[in-house]
Length: 358
Ligand SMILES: *[C@@H]1O[C@H](CO)[C@@H](O)[C@H](O)[C@H]1NC(C)=O
Ligand SMILES: *[C@@H]1O[C@H](CO)[C@@H](O)[C@H](O)[C@H]1NC(C)=O
Ligand SMILES: *[C@@H]1O[C@H](CO)[C@@H](O)[C@H](O)[C@H]1NC(C)=O
Ligand SMILES: *[C@@H]1O[C@H](CO)[C@@H](O)[C@H](O)[C@H]1NC(C)=O
Ligand SMILES: *[C@@H]1O[C@H](CO)[C@@H](O)[C@H](O)[C@H]1NC(C)=O
Image 1 (cartoon, protein in one colour):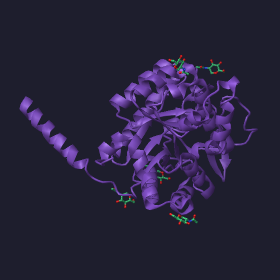
Image 2 (cartoon, rainbow, N blue to C red; image 1 turned 180 degrees about the horizontal axis):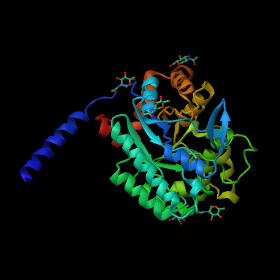
Image 3 (cartoon, rainbow, N blue to C red; image 1 turned 120 degrees about the horizontal axis):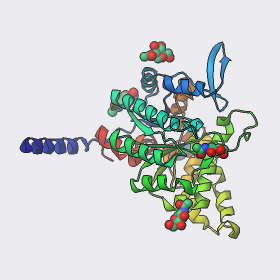
Image 4 (tube, helix red, strand yellow; image 1 turned 90 degrees about the vertical axis):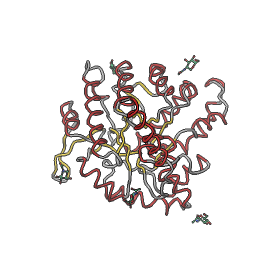
């Protein structure tokens, strides 16, 4: 037995190193921003009181003032094929399980059920799908257990966080144990915006329209001013939608944070911290948005491909992807970074799984 084991291991190592020498094609597309909406999750939202309204004659569930698309796995893979997306890291969009905060173990149970569902999808399509773990924050102990379960047992590609969980924003010291664990693992985290922690900010309009982008800024600003990001800088953090409004507001925030009453933070250090994040292209594929990202980062090494399918429907997501190169006037080397190289740099497990050199 031991010799059989040993020879299998040698074979496995040889196979792995052979595969690992494959150079990934520049056009291979990794979508870091797409969502699943399993039927039981839709039902849980309805049971919790999210409204179902008639939209174009069809009963439609709304969360945060925005319609939740109908979803199934077959459609998801078909949409990837139509868009020319090769691999997607799936996650659960807002409101996650935040709406069950304080309801005993319900949030943790729903998070685990969602993670097991995402696991089954990744097992059905191992070369097409990976998953980002959903956590039952603000429950710290249950979330720590869920991270270990997702990363060690389910072998997920990373962890999903929201800008706030029941009003606890990223940056809050209460989340330090979570950041500590993610930092120790140099984990990759996808931060999805949710409705602001204070109700009414959107004036009754859909939260995704304006509040989500500002939520991303709010979370990055809070992590700056509390010092949490500086403490836990090994976590690879992705903010969607071109970083919200961050490319536009970064110098303003850095300037104010340098005032003595806010801690006299060094402007260059603040900007360097912000430039350490990754931003995706979901709903951010116009010339002004792509140029803002490129100017902000000083290049394309932090820009990732994102579609936000199915919340952004296929009819919009597909032309959005096609617009990146034309609107950004990116070279093929820059497109290779945006399509896959940048993603593979923070998802080394995906590179290993697919046999790509990084
Ligand atoms: C997925 O949804 C589509 C409609 O978008 C439907 O035609 C198809 O039958 C569904 N597939 C499964 C397996 O439920
Ligand atoms: C990536 O997707 C494109 C478009 O669907 C396809 O032509 C190509 O063969 C895929 N690449 C790999 C390595 O699977
Ligand atoms: C959620 O927020 C509400 C309002 O601030 C608070 O009363 C409640 O305790 C919070 N629940 C949890 C689980 O933190
Ligand atoms: C950052 O680390 C310092 C030093 O260990 C600690 O005092 C502080 O509470 C931490 N702050 C946050 C928000 O993690
Ligand atoms: C596009 O980029 C090329 C250099 O890669 C530059 O020569 C050209 O002027 C740019 N076009 C526009 C419209 O910005």
